[in-house]
Image (cartoon, rainbow, N blue to C red; front, side):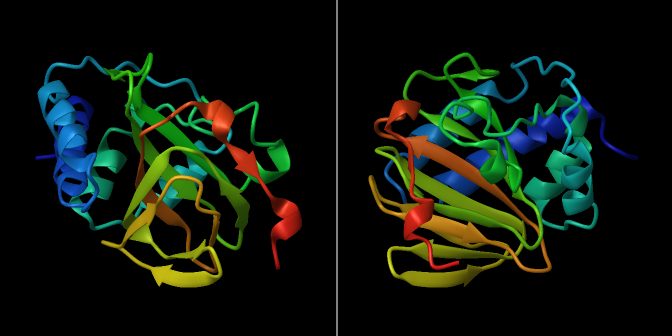
Length: 205
C-alpha cells in the first residue's frame, strides 16, 4: 500500500533528522531534534507550481535512498524555488537556472527556526554553479545522483551518502555531468543571506 503524501512528508522530516544527526557537524544534533519534534505536527500545504518541478520529478524518479523516496512521495508539499526563497536577490537568473531548492526549516518556514536553515537542493545535469561563499557554515548530504564539489583548489566526486561541509567563508562550487544531483542542505552560524557572495570571475570553467 502506497503511503499518503502526508505520511511521506512526516517520513521526509524524520529521514532528514537521521542524516543531519550523523553528518559530523556541530549543528547536526540540534537540526535533528527540531525536525523530529516537527514530524507529525507540522501541517504541510500544497506547493505553488514552479517552472522546474519537472526536473525534480525526473531527478527523483528512480531514487532508492529512503530520504529521496520520501521526498518523491510528498512532492505536492515541497515548494521549490530558484534559491530556496531567500537568496533571490543575491543569485542572478543565469546562475540559478542551473538548480532549484526549497527551504523546509528557517525563519518563516514550515519548520520555524530563527538560526538554522535547511531544505533540499536539486541541480540539473551538465550544469555548473560558480564559486561562491557566505558566512554561514554549510552542509550538504547527497541522496541521489552525482556531484563534483570544488572547495578551494580541490574538486571531489560525491555520490549518494556523501557529506560535504563548507566552513564559514570557504569558496566552493558544484558541477554535474550526465546525472543530476539531489541533496539535503543546511546553513548554521550566521545565516544572514546578505553575507552571500558570488565570484564567477575566479572560475576556471
